[in-house]
Image 1 (cartoon, rainbow, N blue to C red):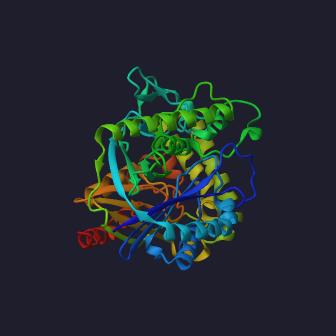
Image 2 (cartoon, rainbow, N blue to C red):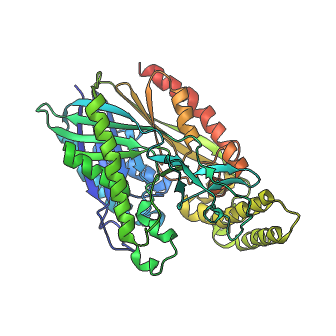
Image 3 (spheres, one colour):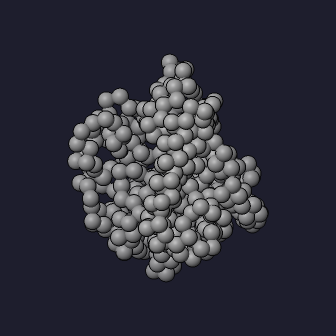
Amino acid sequence: MAVCSFAKIPLRGCFTPRWPFATELYGRLFYLRSGEEQALFCAFDSLNTWASDARRFRAEVSAACGIPEKSIVYHELQCHAAPDSDLMHEAMDGIIERAVAAVREMVRNAVPFTCEVTEAYFGTDCSFNREQYVEGLGGVTVWTGMGFDGDGRPCTANEGIMLLQDYRPHIVEKPVYFDNPNDPLAYLFVFRGEDGRTLGTLSRFAAHPDVGVLFELRPVQGKAQMYRYDFDWPGYLSERLERDLGGLSVYLNGPCADLSTKKGYDGIDDFEASDAECRRLGNWFADKLELSYRETKRVLTDTDFLRTETFTAVLPMREDMPRTLEEAKYGQDALLNAAREAFEQAKADPTRTPAQVKRTIDDYYKALYNGRMAYDICNFNDETLAKREVTVDIPCVRFADYLFVGVPGESLTELSTWLRSVCTGSKTIPLDQCNGYYSYMATPRSLTLGGYTYWCSWTTRESIPALQKQIQPKLRAFLDLSK
């Protein structure tokens, strides 16, 4: 008989805070065991943990708790008002210590359960794809300030929010609709003990938890004093589910590189307003999940069925990335200055089209991020930079008729679509930012169009196709073994 347990550990005290805490930040843990197989999901209110630290976490928790490394999923929610990179590196000793203590207790105290599940179709009500192609300009990305028409469809004619530096081509004369595909599926699993009481819930959606810092993109004074640690809308979603359904809530985030919530903008001029918007969104999503649960829940059968694996894939890195960490830290100024000069020249040249100027803006941003991506955002070592190859870990958990697949970095909606098309015969739930952060996983399409995904990625045109080619047969073999 399968057993499960839930726990959470606070992140406060594991790192030296740079801001005050508005809410607590947690690692939320969900443990499953059936026969000899085990699975552990660890979801953190953080962002940008280096892959080396995620691997260390999995190895040490595995050794201390008797759970195979292949069965441990290290997952981050990408909460922007949270510690990242160097602070998560500093925090890792404390996080591992707290996780080991919690997981040991979870293993001892796991109990039999029944599970109810609902699959909620959110459609375009709650999120949208924030990247779009603009005729004559190229691919643009909008972080915030998006407008919505009378039907709630996201649109804007504001070139000032399209990440164009100070360039305004004045070619967007009517609203551009941001209607590329999103991931419309949300899930809620409710685990109950033999006495009928809720042990915990597992929920999943796909959108950026970047709402706690909305004020930073507003033209207001005193921003440096406003920052607070905040678990964003997933934290408020979890609080609502715990209040209404009982137990402990674990939220998992789907691929969200190009997905934004339908968040507000006007009047969000300070942290308090940003936090209020986090609460509104969290409660909104909880309302929709709970309604779906009341109307369409079903009892999950075959809950004794559990299989886990972690696959690796080796992906090519762009040739214009730094060759060493020293070059990344100290050798990028000339490239950045040249990129900036190319942009200024293009902007001043009346013969250059807006699309040509836009590409120089993207190239400038790419030069700005190249070095930092190597030594800070992804923390690649010299060997990885020299080989121009990045090894990523892809965790897979098959539970009953559901397949959880963790993808690296901030992945695009099209990867979710691809996974669901490949993994037929199971209900596939893609998860973002698993087993370490790898920045944006740009696809051939996004590299062609430009925009934020283009310049915040180390990938080549071959990287995502290589990922798909390497993991497709592994996934199919895993599913065959899981029948």
